[in-house]
Image (cartoon, rainbow, N blue to C red; front, side, top):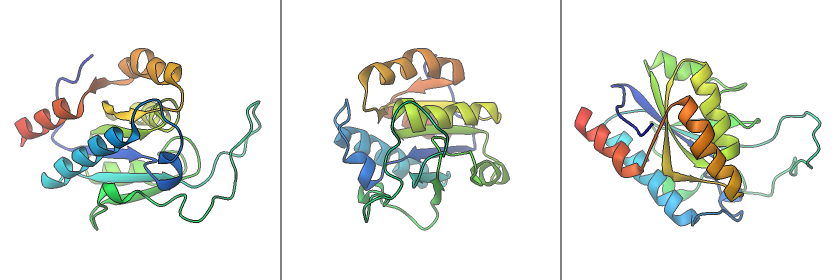
Amino acid sequence: MPVTTLDPKTALIIIDLQKGIVALPAVHPIGEVIANAATLAAAFRKLGLPVVLVNVAGGAPGRNEQAHSAREFPSGWTDLIPELNVQPADHKVTKHTWGAFAHTDLDALLKEAGVTQVVLAGVATSIGVESTAREAYALGFNVTIATDAVTDLNLAAHENSLTRIFPRLGETGTTREIIGLLEKGA
């Protein structure tokens, strides 16, 4: 369902827009994804709404069929990209699993701030973004995905998340549509 409304206390969560991740090959131009995420962050900040910047610095230890990425990252790999224009009021969360809620204080932080809805942006659509969306939905948040502020390393996985998974977890909309609703509610 296309985005219809945003709750008065909505937070933006930007997933894994960090130097090491944005250097990987994405199926959409990463510059556009970054620009849209940065535009969303500026709009949320302008209205005094929470902005959460998430980076990943590890992975869950479980065994799987696909090889894990390196456990030790090169210098600067986890640094948030400068285009996000990190502000002192932004909340920073470092995760060690795919989703931003597991084993972090994000749920408590958002609920303490009275947040009832989250807008998600970042990479990868089918991994960090989808996992965070699933966790947010399970925790009772209304969920919106900024469709032009997400991308993936795999086109089929990206499209599956956008067309099959996200509509079951919440609503989707473009950066422009989301900002329009933010401004309408301001």
